[in-house]
Length: 190
Ligand SMILES: CC(C)(COP(=O)(O)OP(=O)(O)OC[C@H]1O[C@@H](n2cnc3c(N)ncnc32)[C@H](O)[C@@H]1OP(=O)(O)O)[C@@H](O)C(=O)NCCC(=O)NCCS
Image 1 (cartoon, protein in one colour):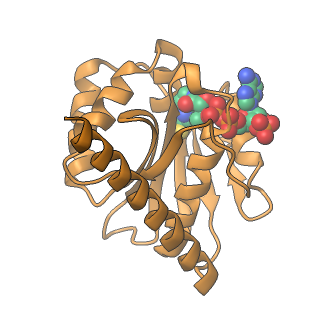
Image 2 (cartoon, rainbow, N blue to C red):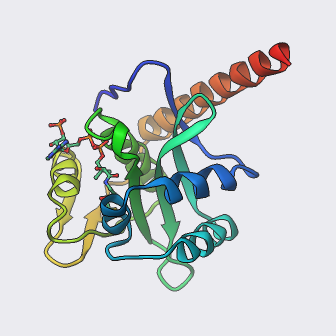
Image 3 (cartoon, rainbow, N blue to C red):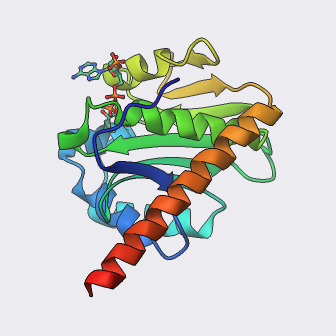
């Protein structure tokens, strides 16, 4: 699926040491988006602990960046050794950036990362009233099967191929180049 992003925006994997940007993004979510993101009402403290845990687990976080600020995120959390082919996926986009194609681009990257790591089943906590997330998931139903019958949706992903690995590698190298350019510009300005 073709990614359409707002001008000047970048989606890239989060680096070690960027957890704070992720935490700030999640804390900035408006109350409705926060509730939808966690399938229930959660406190700031819960979010701080949740993001700390993400840093400690083998999670892959893609960030949607406008300059240095993270305005959207997609997280892929492996369920661990007992369920080696399963992971939890979750997406969040700050309100002013919603309905600009960001969620679609983030979900696309996450599904590709899941596929390339051999995750066959993804769980997504999604409230029944969260039509937007379900609409978004339906956009990918040519390659995946979704079941949002309960609060936790299940996503079956396809097997990795040389092409899917190449697609992830290419988007990583693009994200890395953009981040380096950004760093260089800031250093020159300083
Ligand atoms: C759900 C969420 C991730 C979607 O992100 P987004 O950036 O708004 O999504 P997109 O702009 O890519 O839109 C995806 C699809 O949602 C639907 N959609 C977009 N805006 C919509 C709106 N205002 N009302 C209803 N449906 C809408 C459309 O079908 C759209 O696809 P299309 O533009 O090709 O028609 C975002 O709204 C969000 O962060 N919500 C709060 C957290 C959350 O619900 N997370 C999901 C739980 S894991």
